[in-house]
Amino acid sequence: MTPADDDFHQLWKTKYSKLIFRKSETVPEELHQMVQKGFLTLREHDCFFQDLVRIKGKDFLTPVSRILIGNPGCTYKYLNTRLFTVPWPTEGYDIKYCSPQIHDACKALIRLNDYLHIEAVKTLQGQNLCETKEMKDTAVIDREQSFATSLTERGSVSKDQSGVCVPEDDSVSLKNRTSYNLTLLNYMDPLQMLYLKQEPYFGMGNMAVSWHHDENLVERSTVAVYSYSCEDSGVGESSEQELKGRDPAVWHVGLKVAWDIETPGLAIPLHQGDFYLMLDDLNMTHQHCVLAGLSPRFSSTHRVADCSRGTLEYIFGQCELALQNLQTDSDSVALSLKSLEAAVVKQVEEIHNEVEFEWLRQFWFQGKRYLKCTDWWLKPMAKLEEFWRKMEIMTSLVLSEVRKEQQIEEQRNETISCFLLVLKERQRLRKEWTVRCQSDAAESLPEDQKPECHPFWTDDDECNMPLPYDLEEVIAYLQNLTQWITSDLPA
Ligand SMILES: O=C(O)CCC(=O)C(=O)O
Ligand SMILES: [Fe+2]
Image (cartoon, rainbow, N blue to C red):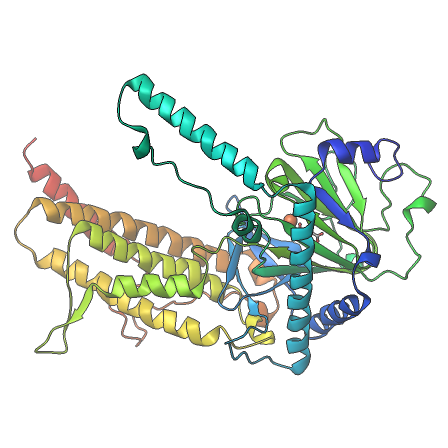
């Protein structure tokens, strides 16, 4: 349904009430100008890139081109692709941009971010979608009572040990759900796209982005989307359209109820400077898509990314934790491990995998794209690689300990089997990334966007790597060892 349908507003009110639309006129003109100029700058500097995503083991190039802008050191993962923020100007950070215009563009987007944050807060307060104090108090009493009842039913313990956890303050949860830490910008010129998928359920026409839920967000957080289609003003008024369905000249956001193709979908026309909000759990209960119009179009999608494992601060913390198990012997320069306990080895090797596959390979897979805007990520990536190299040494140290140990004891068995599992995962992921780097889609990219399979080395490389890239033989050796150990154990 579109605004041309009689039941459109009724359907919106009953099935899509958490979708909020705001017309361009409600946004300050000065902000429009800044932001739209920012979009054009980023396009002029070729900062938008199609992502080489992986869905169910297959590689696809997204029709839309994107760039992630946000808090320094923050990342956003979608469809097995971790995007790294081009940092927006942030107090306490000295960020060098490739040009003053790119700095201005990032500044415009943080201004838009602040504006959309305030609008989202106001909207949630207006909708009563932020839990009020009374609602929370009632919820606590309810929980206390049901907990007390369940205890008395079982005939045990007093009420003051109930351990009810008091929910965070309203203003905190409201803030957590609207404090956007980044925005994913989209750009597409439909005339440059030879083929676009057709919307499969409601006949909504060409899709720029297929039906999906947004991933990697803080639960129930709001998503705010500013839309800028470069149409001549006045053109593409949907009212001029006589035919049924949505106007194929105009960009729309499509919405549907998840797991449901009976309830009619909604297609909301988006003109230059309009924005919309997806409030609360709308992103979970519904799916959305982007229906292409005829003109080039930008959008800026502001999100509260769940970055609990997605910031530089986090991954550096992990690396430090892992490297605590490495020591330089006091009398020499030789390195050794402090502990060979299974749990310790497992943790270290898992962090090794995390830094290798979630950070280094993800980053280099995207070629040199980040250098278009700033060199900000190069230093931290070099640092992470340095840590990762030390972890390669740690892996080789575990291996040599396992090799030289004569005695078979319980703890060693456990260490070897944990170690083996993590190495198998490493081998599987190295193969997957090697394949990903060589897909047809990857080969089709221009030279400066080609994925780099990094780190990569061969046996004759003089790079002083303590272990081979291909872990097949190491794994076979360990597998042999575990079989030998288990067959030797009493039944
Ligand atoms: O461009 C839009 O309106 C929304 C884009 C979108 O859904 C996304 O990037 O996840
Ligand atoms: Fe989305």
